[in-house]
Amino acid sequence: MPNPTDTPPLAGRRAQAARNDTVILEAARAVFLDDPKAPIAAVAERAGVGISALYRRYASKEDLLRKLCHDGLRRFITAAEEATAEPDDWAAFAGFLERVVDADVHSLTVHLAGTFAPTEEMGRAAIRANELVDGLVERARDAGRLRPDVVTQDVGLLLEGCAAIRVPDPERTRQLRRRHLALLLAGLAQTEPPLPGPPPAAGEFDWRWKRSG
Amino acid sequence: MPNPTDTPPLAGRRAQAARNDTVILEAARAVFLDDPKAPIAAVAERAGVGISALYRRYASKEDLLRKLCHDGLRRFITAAEEATAEPDDWAAFAGFLERVVDADVHSLTVHLAGTFAPTEEMGRAAIRANELVDGLVERARDAGRLRPDVVTQDVGLLLEGCAAIRVPDPERTRQLRRRHLALLLAGLAQTEPPLPGPPPAAGEFDWRWKRSG
DNA sequence: TGTGAAGCGGAACGAAGCATTCCGCTCTGA
DNA sequence: TCAGAGCGGAATGCTTCGTTCCGCTTCACA
Image (cartoon, protein in one colour):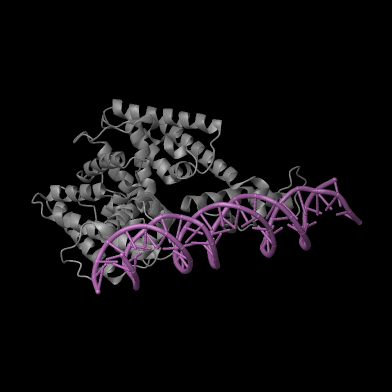
């Protein structure tokens, strides 16, 4: 095995393989975002590679799905961390939502749930993500910019709503979701009328992660 | 139990069959609402009947789906008509949305789209539905209660967002959707900040109705 | 320049899921 | 009494899909 970090050749078979790594991942992302139940072959086709190029990298479809979801979770956390750095409390909160919607990250983590067995590390990442969102919500609420009857779990619901909006063109999808989000943000900034019903609770969405979905 | 001397027999085989008509329809509604790609057998099981009871009534799965969607469209129109009768412009608009969300009608008409060939009558019904929603939007907007940059197509998007929220318990699902809707309504009643991006256009969602979904 | 194998394309395979059909049974209703 | 409406559910034939396998190409290295 040659050292991968030592003057890596950028052309030839190896380079092509390295390039395929990302091409495949991007294709998988696009395909499963479009249809979480898409066949493996669709990913291969989209990536412009054969099926064996996929199976050389991932032991099974579940493996690929897990990797994809884990990446999505990481992106989610990055978005939350970046937003947290914003000094203005409301801008931090709103900016976070915009980032997540733009990156289409919620679909990745949620619509893929239940199609694979999550790792322990993903569990930890999920907790971390939750803490970050919690912080953003609390800040915005304490600053009086966010309605007081909103809880952290509302954020997930709200992202779900945005993720549901989809048209064939990805860029147009992004625009429409932004429009929807703007509407929600305008509602979140109000204090009246109060939100009806019991607020969503912490474990109320864990069922998603149970197998066979 | 024998029937009193009445012309239509309400007990016996015939009555059971008549009862099955509605039982099957309700089961189908519940099952396909939960999973638009559910197998026919799931409907039969839920209804507590055999498969042949289904095929006696509908020539094919597509037939059943079409009937279900058409019914949903009718419910949608009824909701819009009832809401239109409300004198207060905002209450009419908000009440319409609440009705549709409560009846879970949007999922029926939209998530099933593309799984069957629509009839001409359904096309007419869709136009009628659109006109009704248009009227409700215009009224609320002219009354100054609804933000001026909202268009009729936004309503579909917004219902889509609500329909995306789901938990295993139907009643809890309804509650959470109501909560989400309340947030949206609070946003819809604001005028600032304006909604970003080009508003959704009329034919922008027709692709749903093209086959093979 | 020879060679072992990494990397790959895509056909082949086997399992699963599903719409639809079919067979035989049970009652009904006249 | 009995023809048949109504029905349950196994059987059928097809499609879809995950995964494996085979043989070819190309590169790294001697």
